[in-house]
Amino acid sequence: MAKSGKPMKFAIFVTGHSAPHIEKKYGDYGALYKELLEDKDNNEEWHVWYPVDKHFPTDDDLKGFKAICVTGSKHDAYATDEWNLKLQELLRTAFDRQQRILGICFGCQTMAIVLGGRVAKSSTGYEGGARTVFTTPEFGKQWYAEKFEEGKNFHLHETHFDIIMDVPPTVTVLGSSKNTPVQMCCVADHFLGLQGHPEFTDKYMEDDLQGRIDSGDLPKEVGEAATKDLHENAVTDEHWKDMQKLLKTFLKVDHPSANVWI
Image (cartoon, rainbow, N blue to C red; front, side, top):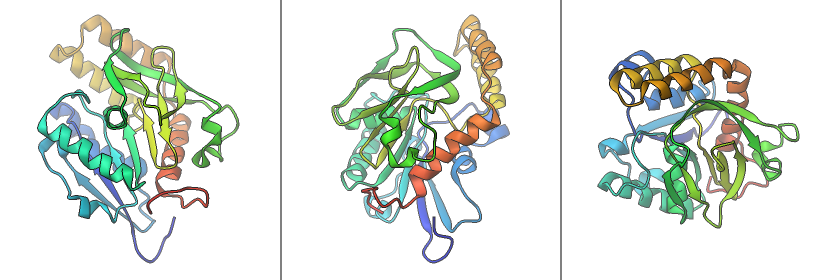
């Protein structure tokens, strides 16, 4: 992580919007990801685009970026909207040149589709609250995991209807939970995906769930069950910082064994 010289450039692709009152209180996904990932005392530039609003960089713009972060969304990763298909094409090109890509929820599912997998509604329905992600032995083999103890598990927020059903042949599963077989996955050194939401806090999740109940987006009993789970399985500051460390390492560290674009 260089502190001088040429700045490290990072792109955030915002693929969805939260309810207006949530964005007013906490900021949009671009702000949440910068809060999670930016090191203000480092020499970094963070650029935010909004594919969900048909706001895209060109591929030439992206070539100078160390990494791309693709956010979560209420939209379906398998939808055939024009912006979604354009996003997939842009990510496919970046992936082919081995540019680092971090995909969260929708972003992870979108990359699975780009790589030949299948995403669909979970047979167990909506999953919300907090979950423990149990890592596989493959997790410990990744260069960005070397600072964690063997058998390290993670705890993070969940809010989704869709999951990866068919894992692409090039994808390695790094973590799972009871109802979501693919909670964490990767391809080689340059793609890392999470089904959960490391950018959320307990308070954000609680307000978001209440808003979904009030708007009718979630049945009351489903939303209240997720809120109860959130209270019983809180994501602590230590949990949040563990995931933050993992993601910053993947995005920023120039590891000698990492075969990546920049």
